[in-house]
Image 1 (cartoon, rainbow, N blue to C red):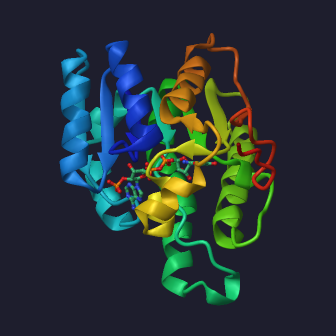
Image 2 (image 1 turned 30 degrees about the horizontal axis):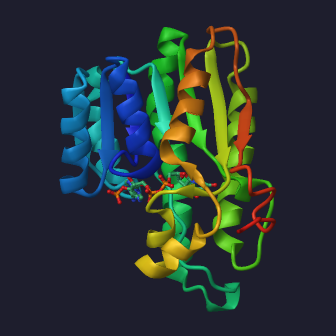
Length: 247
Ligand code: NJP
């Protein structure tokens, strides 16, 4: 069984669909109930047993009490895909409001830590498990107006490395997947403007959510003694967050 956070769109949804094709049971989490039920239905149609929950990963107390109520279900989980994440705005730091950095920190860092902390006791008990964290090229490079988002993804990178060190000696794998530009709802959420979001991907072929999901599925499919530390993947026409070739 695989738990995916942020399964209502983009990379999370693409992972759910790809894993459902393999008939793997899934636990799907996101806030938007209409979108999550759509993913749920599509995965069921592909033949997977699906449990979905409308949860906000920033609501720590709610998540902890949900995890306690669903302890049996979580104990069956072998993989956690910490995918829920977002960027809020593209402003110089002096213009960023505190609620904006709170949201990025709460989802991108604290959400990843929270779900890791809830699944790890089960993984440790079984001496088996795999955590996949969605990092970013923004976890390696910074770019103008990326300030808080870049900081959160640098934190995901450090956390993934540190977790791997803490778990040394246990059969628990930790992998980080760090994409460049992926055409999802990411830019729409970030810019709050559909037209501006479209322009982000103009003149080049970005990665698709499915491209990233395939890389994640490949990491999961490696034999249990093989732990992929990190995969950084770019569209061919992108060489760094700021080096982009557009036609
Ligand atoms: O974006 P999008 P992606 N509680 O917006 C969920 C990283 N990444 O697939 O709650 C629970 O289509 C949200 O669900 P909902 C990025 O940082 C991307 O591209 O219903 N869930 C939705 O399902 C992120 O970590 C790019 O709104 C919450 C999902 O997160 C990951 O890839 C590049 C939530 C976001 O789906 C997936 O993002 C890169 C909450 N509080 C890294 N807040 C890229 N697209 O270019 C959000 O380097 N979600």
